[in-house]
Image 1 (cartoon, rainbow, N blue to C red):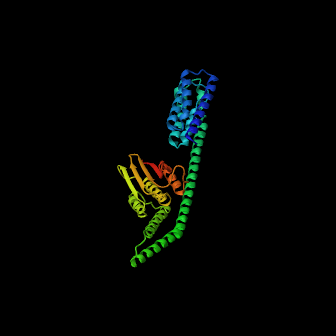
Image 2 (spheres, helix red, strand yellow):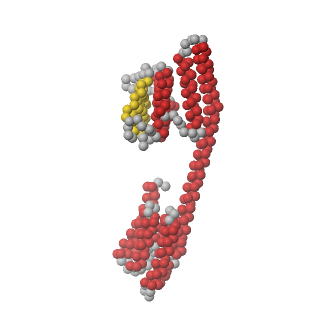
Image 3 (spheres, rainbow, N blue to C red):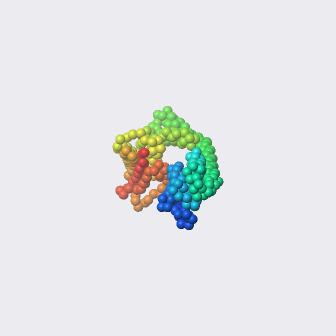
Length: 364
């Protein structure tokens, strides 16, 4: 139940108890003083706070109810707010204070009956009030039953989450095995053949094509990235972060793409998830530029603010505002990653041509 609904229920219960007691006071067989009226209404209104301050409300209602019988004997069940407060105290685990208050109230009735008000006309009325023991026991039992029921429901929800977590872990392991059996082998074969081709070309004294060297290096990087991804799927921490940004940019330059890196602000150690997200943003953006942009240059900018990390990648490729690109899986994944971290991202063509990716990540 939301906090707003809980508050509405608490206020509703307090209003119902107050209305019932006002009606009973108006029809009481004996005179009710202003002091009694105030004490009864105060304890009734305090019922609205019983969920937030169960012990304080219980003690307040106990004090008000005992003082009602010291001042007047109204002949109506003024214990109703006390019973509500007792139920809530037991429900939220304050069993010792709940039982103590219940016993204290009943003993105070006995003391007033035997020692304080002997021979008073209200003696029989006070003796009848002692029969409220059953109501107090019922309130305590119901409160304890509600506490156990909520605890049982919480345990079931926790067990359900554990099952879902275990199933998700098993699924991650299955995916990791599938990726390892299929992609790792294929990429390793590509890297092996590229290495053999480079070796033969060097052995013959021929110039090694840059594209072949790029294939060899990219396949090695792909194997490392895939192993890191498989490790993350198995629960191992991912080690890709901004400390590897220079290597990433050098690999992009190796494909013939001029990349310029600019860092502003005071560079510092970032939380692991922010560090990895920033690296992945730059990686995905450079990959998209290499594949689609036909760009002559790329600018990568990292801006370190006390509470914000800004990542900006812009190129001078063929993208224009008139031809909006269709977001691919990479851009969608970037946006999801950034949103999950509480940040924001924009990816759009620039007015003078090219493409801009800008992300802002909050650094807590």
